Image 1 (cartoon, rainbow, N blue to C red):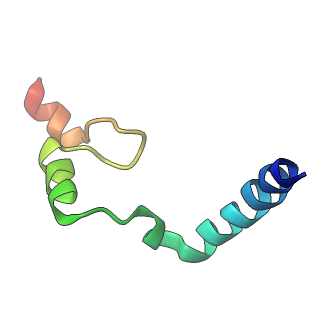
Image 2 (cartoon, rainbow, N blue to C red; image 1 turned 120 degrees about the horizontal axis):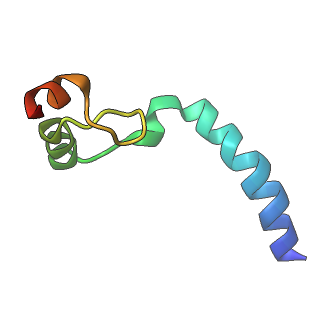
Length: 58
């Protein structure tokens, strides 16, 4: 019974609702990780290289 409650109530309703309420706070990263992310030229649209980075590689 606990597994059903966890799967259907907590994971299907509470987690998405809390993520919506928290907004950008869900995506917190330590400073070093943000710097590595920016240096690599990654954006938030699925881990692809940004257009500026792509142009410099071509």
